[in-house]
Length: 228
Image (cartoon, rainbow, N blue to C red; front, side, top):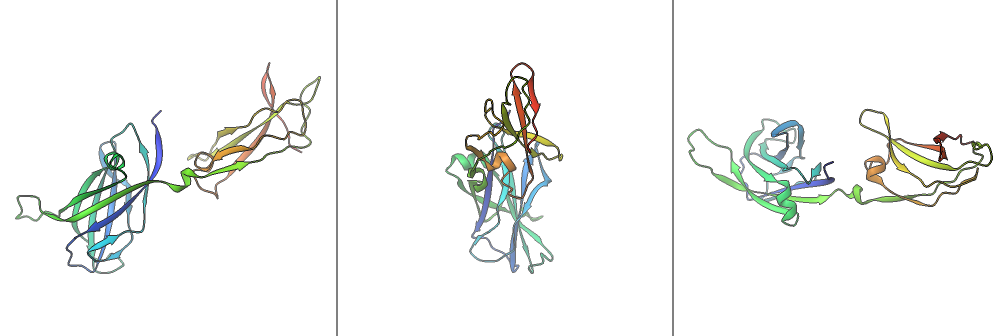
């Protein structure tokens, strides 16, 4: 399975000559060999100045085993409603090369080609900064207890454990965490569980999760136990 990590891409431009009042950038991520609009991002509008730092970030899944590049298009427009946009220039940047270069790389912006041009002309530069998405670094500690569980074993009490589930992109439940088994009790007190927010809920604190309690039977496998 490919190794993935969520990262944020930040953008700034320097030394760009523009005739319009405002500037914004469109960024496309190379997917399956193509720059597709479904994998695109658009920054906020900024006033033209010698050095522009866009405040918005593009979030992507960086895949270590794949070569991922982005296409940055810089556009100028006459107002904040992006009226009459025109292309100032573009450039392609390797995400992996930027990461291995310390997380920042400056690349020349190739000016939009005019009909009379036979060679590339450059108009300033684009600076790409990468960083790990903050939510992927966050962990929480879950402390779980049970009371009044069903007695599932004929000759003793239950051996309960908890499975935590999250909803996937298709809206179905999928398992993301599994507690330890607490032997022979109907009032379990599980050890604190360190949980990655990224794995638990993709960093979205408003997402829905589900806790299910089971009784472990070494001979028959798991059986559902009711929490009263």
